[in-house]
Length: 108
Length: 114
Image (cartoon, rainbow over all chains, first blue to last red; front, top):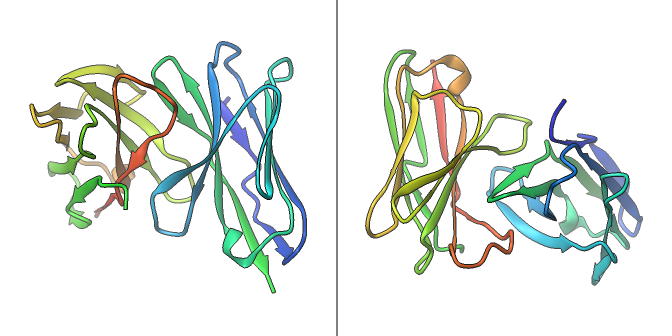
């Protein structure tokens, strides 16, 4: 079983739609959680950290459920520029473990 | 721009050969990690260096080795290349004093093994 599991998608949504991605992790001792974004043929970049209380950054909302070992990312009012792969990331001790990524394609 | 540079950007090797990939970390960052990203997969942790010492390793065989230099630049060496080693190799740096989870990645070295 992979340490971090995500639905690979692709999710094809129209502009303006709301889309949600989910992720589960297997190590209950994981310390912190993140979403990274990776554009096609580019390097991953930090999108946002994920806190137990839930956190929001503009159109993006992240949630963490430690009891269920579940992380989510909600994108509201999707833009064409949101098209990318979204990587769920978990920190165990001093290393980051990446999920496979969920591909999002926003169409006009 | 993250300030992390990698070379070469693309290269082609044949099975059994050896390869060295190079990374120059962002100024002030003394921790460097290497990741392997196969097509359609997320980055997989290979190892991490802090102040020239390896301080973490993923599930990769010993033929994957590395170095970090006093200026914090780094190398990844892969011996006895196999077809499955074809991937994007990403170098990432961060400050060792604060692990916020933000890694600054280079654009990667795309290795093809024939």
